[in-house]
Length: 228
Image (cartoon, rainbow, N blue to C red; front, top):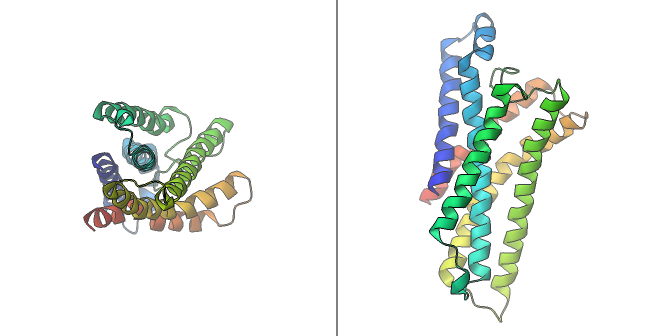
């Protein structure tokens, strides 16, 4: 949960950077566009947002897998996940997300393509492959989450099996949190996949509006969902 909260914090830093530039360049962005998009500020903002979104997806997937594992093997104390296992798994996630966010800064794709500093560069096969990889990882994560919750539901409904009430309650709460997050990401992934297949369903201008509305929504909603 702390990892997920930190990912949301990073998204907040990204939004703060974008908002401050918007405020600074109000009504005259055209005078600052090149300096902003090609400067270190946009790269920093882009790094924060990709790192935040991918760490969030990774953490939510790990939480789901942990809930599934805890409920499936509730009676097998010898198969319980230890804290050291969690450290190793999350360390691997941090490294992977850090590298994924770093790639556009070293020439694979670019954060300088659009004013909101997202890696929307598709001019080269390598840049296209990068975007496809990010989308594929998110789709795979969503499939894993759905599969795990279907298995949790089947396990809980099985009259021959009686998992601990605590595990079941946590799983239900996490389900609300996780599906809310993935529903926020679904429109972006859907339209991005259509664009990758050279069949864009919306214009570039509308895609920016979609990103501004939906992209940070889950990070803004998560703190309220944690409190509830």
